[in-house]
Image 1 (cartoon, rainbow, N blue to C red):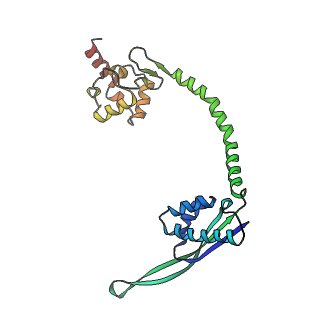
Image 2 (cartoon, helix red, strand yellow):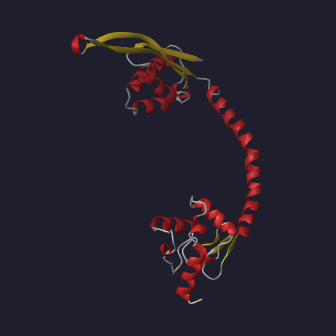
Image 3 (cartoon, one colour):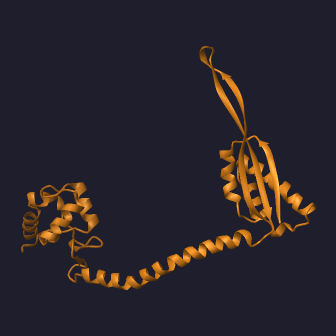
Length: 244
């Protein structure tokens, strides 16, 4: 059974009151009243009064149990607008619109009305998502295997070999080279290379054409690595430092 209560000509704009209406719709009455009591908005106070009037009707006139009631709908309609004016400069006036609204709350004791609809909606959504989830779980081992193949561990320095990036480190190795010694590499570019996993000259010296192409994209400048001769400079710096 439905119990309706309406607050006519409430001194609040419909737009502001609808924010509160959306929050309480579909909730049990006890939860809705708790929410309204702790919401510091004028609309919450007006909805609280309207809901208490509906509760009183349900208890006294229709002998319904308060515990089984929920908010079936909370609707806000626009009421008349009072027009006032405020004096402004040079004898002019600006309009002030004092808006009103009609607040309607419908309580129901039909426990299956809202919850079943929501559960059905969720279950349908879950049923649609289930095949996708199963397919994702099925493809997960394949993706993991592919990742293991493309990223082989490097026993010498704790790095790993990536097909696109060459040899990279997940964290800084014990010995780090000053990449700023390479032509065209400044502090910011060095920081960016470190974030990708490039820390030593040997990594740049071993780059293939595919690696150079990938870093051209990552560092957002095409042809600069080849133009500034990063690979040859890195080889020279590595040989100078390690005597190889």
